[in-house]
Length: 292
Image 1: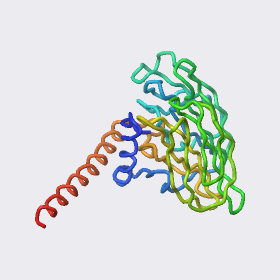
Image 2: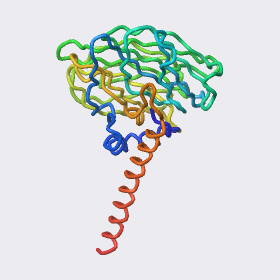
Image 3: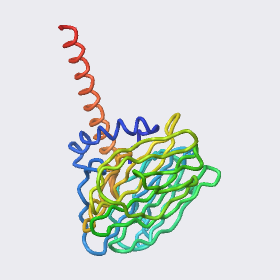
Image 4: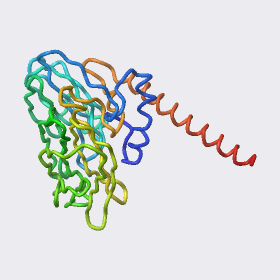
């Protein structure tokens, strides 16, 4: 999970920097290009998300009932960020959210239990408005019918309480209410343009959807309009979930028992390298223009 993506526009810039970060941190790049995770028998997957627009950043804790001392801590998680899939041993877990920077011994803002089955994947998301914040557990699909693409929609925009999402001429979600999620729907593979339509607002996402892939489209608030994020739940029917989604630097999320400091240093270095490269390119372009 990225700790820096406080605005959707910045999240997209950071997502473009994920390649630099991944080369330095040996971490998964953005979801559309991430390799599948490898895991042995008895393993499931958990993905954690903050999808409440007016809820401040939180720290997310993952506890195992089998070993309460072992936990994953994701710090300063802001709206619109989603972790990569975390491989975990099948069993019972508790997901807890605390205000960003709060002591680990403080009472969580909210928590929920989730049972992970071997070979299955789940998304646990903070949903709804701050006053009615809840943790919701979604069962993620890992297999698609032959020759088909599976897509579902999560409506996480509070700016538009009702949003209609179309993929090509297909209506995926008619008047989907804020805080709601659709079931998966099968569509034909190929290049599709996705539109999220609210009150005189629309946003476009054009992507190629390969057969056997599975996607979750998240409608988010962006300053002045809506945006859509495409999360790749699985890259094919016979592979395990893909890694970090395009909402940030999720592929660098720490694993249980690791310090977040090396991760932060590496992520910052990757972003700085990318921004430095962009600056050099712009200077070179201006210099070339001046010589003509």
